Image (cartoon, rainbow, N blue to C red; front, side):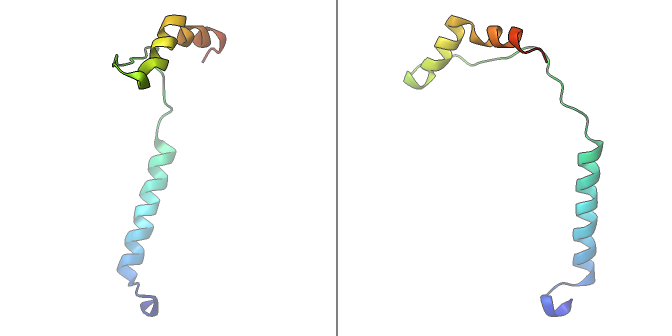
Length: 68
């Protein structure tokens, strides 16, 4: 391993870090939606789509169609 520039300590640290990462992913809980969406009101042409979504109540319409 020394030919590759790896020492046993660095290999052990990487293995330990990978084990902790895998354990964290396995033990993490499922994401739960709170049921409330906040959209910031801004001004400008790039936020026009948010005004259309709010005006036509598209978020509410799609939430009723696809229950979680």
